[in-house]
Length: 132
Image 1 (tube, helix red, strand yellow):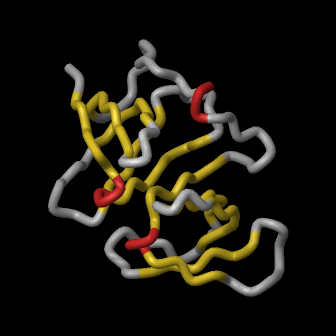
Image 2 (tube, rainbow, N blue to C red):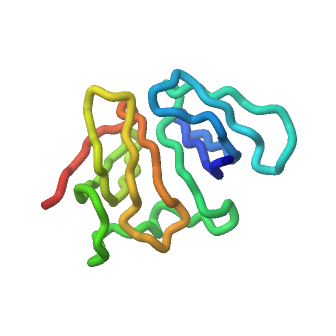
């Protein structure tokens, strides 16, 4: 199955596409163009800030529109605020975080936002705040 994703790189670039072979423990994965067809791009995890799994490409909202709070919905995981080294902050939930791993999955706080989940690369994180 292909996952619809937007790759956010540490240098500020973004790239939309599909992936079938992303694994958090792998050094690289391939991104097929979102327009269909074309040649897959090889993405190194070390170059990545985060991989955003999206519902669709057309309704992506800017980061300023993201929920900056935790709703009352029951969501598994620890309430978490992530601040990236580039200054971006996101609110959501983590189930398994380890500072010693390459990265971790993160669920956005707002179930209505376009991102269904996010794989965050630890080396792109400035600060993690776990909430009660």
